[in-house]
Amino acid sequence: MPERSQWLGRVRLLSVYLFIAALVILARPTPFLVGVGAALALVGESIRLWAAGHLRKSVRLATSGPYARTQNPLYLGRLLILTGLGLAATNPWGINYVALLAGYAVFFLYYIPRKLRVEGDRLARIHGEAYERYRTSVPILFPSLRTFPGERDSWSFAQMVRNQEPLVLMGLLATFAFLVWKLRPA
Image (cartoon, rainbow, N blue to C red; front, top):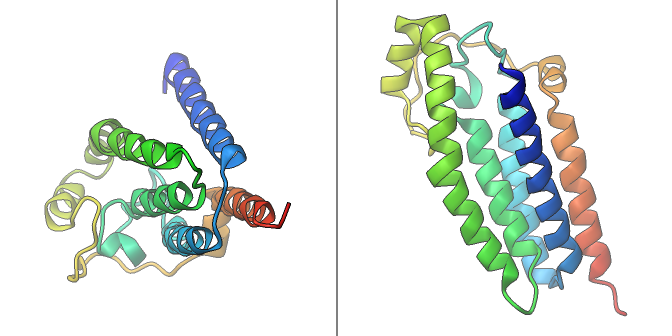
């Protein structure tokens, strides 16, 4: 990956984290919405943990675990986490809902199309016809009830750690712990 792309990627990621931090700091959470948000984020992170244990980037085409039902379980998990955080970080001015709508717009109009183009090209180069069969058989984001008949690898804790998913989990736990802490009486 070119150095400029890596730098821009880091800047984008840092800006997202800073925006989430500001949203959470300004939040005036309610117990109900923290509970609903945490439940959605937990489902999203569970999908991500499951997917990360099956993903061997650029080595093998992931078709097992959640990849047998959706091409992008990590993105599906990210969408659920985004929704959970957007609901849980509520505030009196509705900034969280504006942020959630903006997040959806960025996610569906920029992030997903860009990732599909870049990753699709890379996977097509690496895996050829196998990727084309997979791409045309498995939905992009929302899971299918049918299972893709690809290779069945078992989930790997070590692979999940190599894919750095525990960092996402720790960040989520810290964020929701902070929101719960903010629920205490003043």
